[in-house]
Image 1 (cartoon, rainbow, N blue to C red):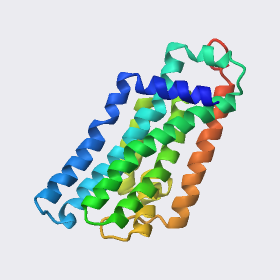
Image 2 (cartoon, one colour; image 1 turned 90 degrees about the vertical axis):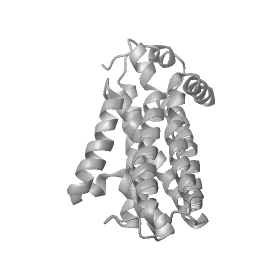
Image 3 (spheres, rainbow, N blue to C red; image 1 turned 45 degrees about the horizontal axis):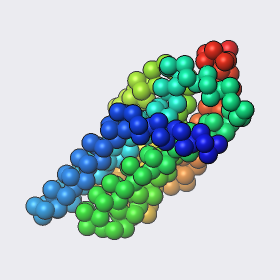
Image 4 (cartoon, one colour; image 1 turned 90 degrees about the horizontal axis):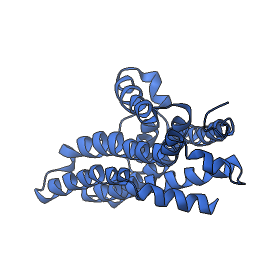
Length: 236
């Protein structure tokens, strides 16, 4: 299992896809730093930078890039066959790749969000954002890893979820908020560090329970899905 995780991490950072992880976090921190340098009140830029960019774009997009990258390319090019012929349980393969995806997403998203919170004038807000981003990273990673196994266009499906389900419908259809990971992240942040920027009807209990369900169910379905792959690299 550790060998699979090591190979996955090396392959992830050895591809050009890894370079896609840098621009958004840099932009996030850069904008916050610029506002801080010019003494712009966080009340004026917090909603746009922290919530609209950091939580609604940086976190899910980073998770999408990483979550679909740890396994999706192997399914596409057929190299998944080499992994499946190894004497490893399908469960261990998925758990190893999920661990890499969740860990990388957590670091790449939680660190810049923490710095952004600190630049907004509150270490408590920074810590809250980091904790919430970690929870979101684990939930998003499970979902997007599953997408890479159930669709030949996992990035497209993931973007539809982020932009349409969480973005468009989430703003106009209140019922969808209870099934949106981004709303769980906002709810957790606001509970730890209450502020006027975070508004969501989702309760903390719902956020925690649903995040756990996304994480466990997504991983379990991914394990089951990989179990249906034949040695030809296609589902039976």
